[in-house]
Image 1 (tube, rainbow, N blue to C red):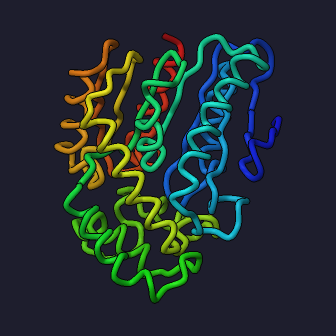
Image 2 (cartoon, rainbow, N blue to C red):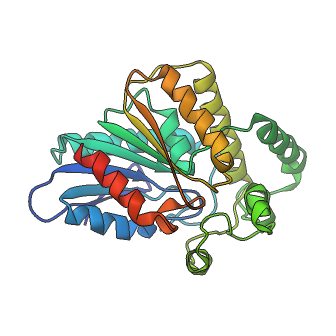
Length: 289
């Protein structure tokens, strides 16, 4: 593995395969997880001759304190992605490069679809921006903000974010929404770098990000990059299929390149659910062209 510091904290990790490099994939991971959870995918793609890279966001992985972020970090994340893609192109000679964004990473990717110079984009666990919910959360945090430290993680804030996703599976907290496989849910909850409480600043970042994604999509900024949406049929983030289908339909209208929606059995993390192998094969098929 090769490491490269981006700015003051983001650590670009590059996993090259042995021998000839056939292409590359840059990963934007999900909220309250880390790049290490993609090691099985990285190893599989390396074995097929593909370089894989990514970095942990602020407040994730090695970037402590965990769960602490602010809206001011969004531009830094954007520039970190674009700089990483430039490095892979210019310094590592990757001619065929793809971007993979899961969940929170899919929203970050949607901010820069008109800027990225890649051969294709894969969006996993994507969903509609719910402005009503976003505004309601913003109003609540506006009332509580003066009485709360912005950089102190609080479990109730995490529960507030995830409660609507867990409720269809009989819970108000936890991580039942990520997978229909109990062992994968347990693995997530037992990982000390996953599912941590978030800070008020982190909650504000989520609200700001949703607002920015809604703004750019409302302006119908045209893009020209092949996009594949991969979503679990029982993923509440994707509205059990309806929400992600609406997003895909939107991009079919404003994308000069093909936009495809692939629905598979399972919940939010399709790489850790019953259709994992099929999803990996789908990713490989896209990378191989």
